[in-house]
Length: 364
Image (cartoon, rainbow, N blue to C red; front, side):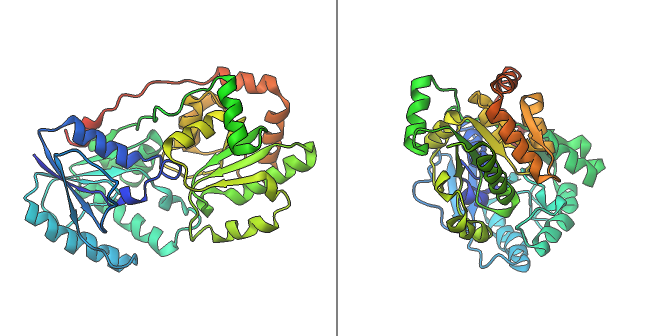
């Protein structure tokens, strides 16, 4: 088969911000099916270090601007024109969108539905656009693939009739996430946290990740316990997060907050594994990859209550009330002081293996 893929979202993939989910899926499916030819469509020239197997070719369809009408023009006209030239048998919409004007059978892949919940930091007009078109994309798709059971429920609430063509494909956790021996953990603490214990939060510096409440909770912990504990924020800086970044120089405990914006996968794996605990404050993610990563590293997790966090961590996570900011500080202090609680949480971790079922992307 000749399989076309809207791969533009790969250009935003990073280990900390997205978990490289789409990149890994595309790499896996193309490597496991050398008998098929894949055409990856990008809206700008991909970097030279983005390598694919020999059965992958890339086509650049330049986009001009990110306004809704410009995105519509690219998806429904420019991309459709490029698709026609490739004589495709199947098209994969990896970013939760597919061109409705195309007659090529399409599989829709959905990794995020935050726009259904009014997530912070994304223009309301963009969220309305995505919400308006989601039902159309689902109806047009031959198959709909979601990357968590949380996303499955969101899709079914929006389009109950999609159940027959809906498939859940759980992304695998990178092999770099593994528990560390004491000596290795001490080395990580020395490298990134001045030899002291630390909490870690993984994700871009963006309002949707609720980092301001986390910083306030960390301040409360420092005031109450007079601890030398540090907070590591691992993720890229974004324009939407400028206010958060700008507040850090005046933050009272700024010397105990460490920004790590460009960690590669190996570095991220070590930082998560070396943490005293991971704090997950994203409420409306489709897939809580940092929680899965911490579970794999045998690191306890504190999370704001949310469906994706519950799916990833179950009873092994200490949940905080998102409507009560003091509760997050209370939970962080509690975990810091109570080693028995920490041990109980670790004992509940379920490292269920995941099969890399890439075939779900292309096989009905």
